[in-house]
Image (cartoon, rainbow, N blue to C red; front, side, top):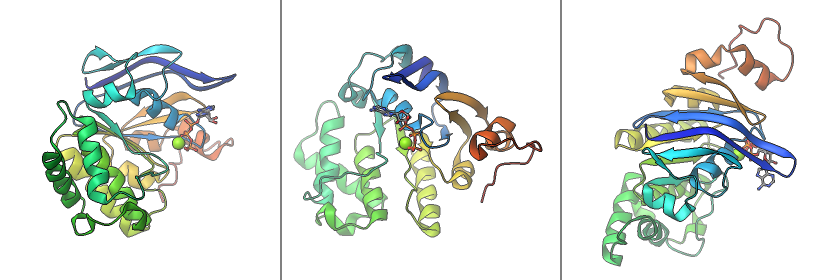
Length: 250
Ligand SMILES: Nc1ncnc2c1ncn2[C@@H]1O[C@H](COP(=O)(O)OP(=O)(O)OP(=O)(O)O)[C@@H](O)[C@H]1O
Ligand SMILES: [Mg+2]
């Protein structure tokens, strides 16, 4: 088991954002994570990366208890993420943005030359090499998202958490991004993806987990989850008596 969450909870004041969630992720999987706005998806990512500590529960990575580790330490163990709101260093070149990730995430830290070589390789894989010397602020949204992905990959993660990578992309950009996600997985990286674009997510996920109001209400293959009455209700928010109707995958 690569990642295991055991009864993990996290509150903010009186609000329980994540409530007694169990989750297991095997190496090589793409796990989709869906749920309505405010369901706790990003909070769950923050608990996995160490941005927040859980109020209770345990997080294991490769069998070791990482619950008390800092984000920096977890990064060195091989956990990386992209952010829902992409935030590269705007005035650094693409190359430097990615090279920073490679220096930060690796143990021992590589030389500048080695970091730049690795950054070039990652930029090439994501189709950004021709823009390597440009400042990040000049990029379009889709390329900023690719850069965000490159920065995460430069830390050589075993587990990559993608938070709404597809948001704001047009349909052909979404298809290209899903292809890229598959290729990243095929290169040996395990992935957990949060997306509101359910159809695209279900197309690429081996398994899907559903959060609603902080609780995991369903988990299984995309086919199974799409037909689950609780999931349909959580998304439509009303009583749909003929709930065998699958959620709209359009
Ligand atoms: N740092 C924080 N301080 C206080 N409340 C927070 C904090 N982070 C998240 N919350 C609250 O926890 C709940 C879950 O938020 P979270 O961002 O995890 O949801 P989400 O599923 O990612 O939603 P979205 O789909 O809108 O991104 C929300 O009610 C949110 O307001
Ligand atoms: Mg979120």
